[in-house]
Amino acid sequence: MKMLERIMLENKAWVQEKLSANPDYLNYLAQNRSPDILWIGCSDSRLHADEITHCEPGEILVHRNIGNQVVSTDLSLMGALEYAVDVLNVKHIIVCGHYRCRSIKAALDRPNPSLPFADKWLKNIKDIYRLHRQQIENFDSLDERWKMLVEVNIKEQVINLSNNPIIQKSWRRGKKPDLHGLVYGLNDGLIREVCSMTPYSALDPIYEYNLDCLTA
Ligand SMILES: [Zn+2]
Image 1 (tube, rainbow, N blue to C red):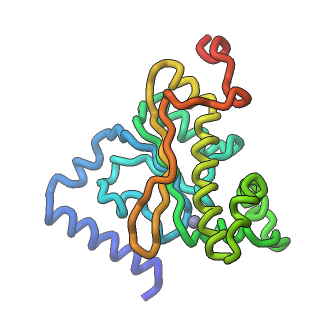
Image 2: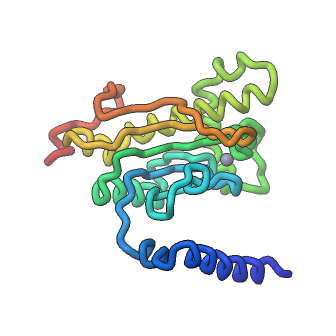
């Protein structure tokens, strides 16, 4: 059976399965949802936020990109972030990376001239490597360096969120969200906390927006 045929058939099977368990399931999903969580995850095909957290569709607003990055020129993410914070008033934003992330491993390697766009995107992670070079190169093995870069990348992406004007505006108004950096273990299926920030976390002044300009 061809892949597309399989997907179409499995979709019908999914509908039947859900309706047989709960005839109102699709009506329930069709209602407006107001998720409390924005999840920024890696595009990796093995990682699905809803599935690994046993959440129903509608509970988590998900944005995924290669290497779970928060890049201020990424209009897709910035649009989702703005909507999540300013309209949905999400209470939590999660940056979830994962061990054995191939995009992080690619960033540890030399650029690949045959993949210029992927390389351009991964350059952000190379910059994080350079920033944390000493800590990463304390480890001799590639696996340990890979693991460490996964973790520092998550921390840096949470910091990127805290440096974003959408987040800072919300915090200055006395609102959420809390920011969480999580890492998922492909081998054991478990999520672990790497870091967190709240509206009361200290910001590096060099990244702190002028209050008066923001709230005007
Ligand atoms: Zn990944």
